[in-house]
Amino acid sequence: QVQLVESGGGLVQAGGSLRLSCAASGRTFSSNAMGWFRQAPGKEREFVGCVDGSGSVVLYGVSVKGRFTISRDNAKNTVSLQMNSLKPEDTAVYYCAARRSSYRSSRVLDYDYWGQGTQVTVSS
Image (tube, rainbow, N blue to C red; front, side, top):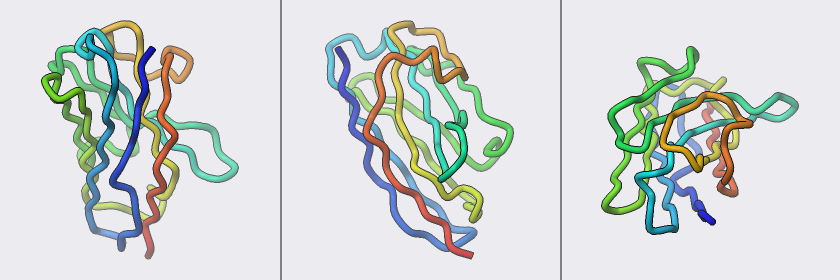
């Protein structure tokens, strides 16, 4: 069982930056690929990015590529999402997720554990 707790959400103006963090429980964090997803009101959950267990392979969603950066620290059981050049359309609840596999995936259904989510609001 893995428990995930996100932090770092908030309100920011367009063009600004935020950094989200996700702390994971468990003793084998490096065996879990980690993903970030987001969900805006009335929309489906959207893939933001993911990283494999070692942190060497990262994949980003088309809408955030070049603006967002994922990193993980296996010694601290954390994964972060640095968000730059934020746009109003980035407004959503952001979720951290973990897989029981170390292979990264962009699919919601491939993730076994989810955090409670943190709100990110970007004003124009």
